[in-house]
Image (cartoon, rainbow, N blue to C red; front, side, top):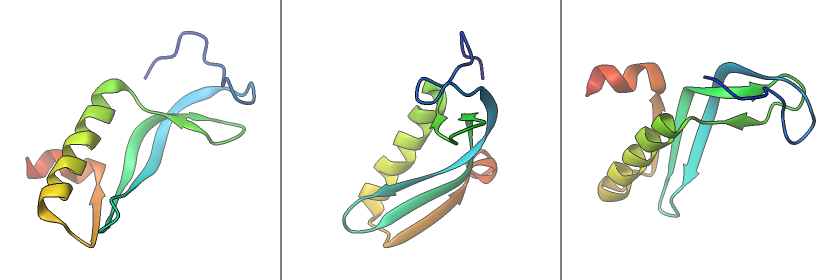
Length: 83
């Protein structure tokens, strides 16, 4: 997790490697992924995802759209083990 200047464009705080929770409302249900790696601002808590992380989340959402779960909760660390 690298950022060129490390400054949060929203508040000026410092972006640092951390974890966040991401949720998707699919209208028929909700997908929540816990412990997602992200750059997290130490002041405002805003987060940014790397492209490779976003791509994996998009794949999870595509599968959820096919399966239509009402609620799906996934843990990022467990996602790689299930594949």
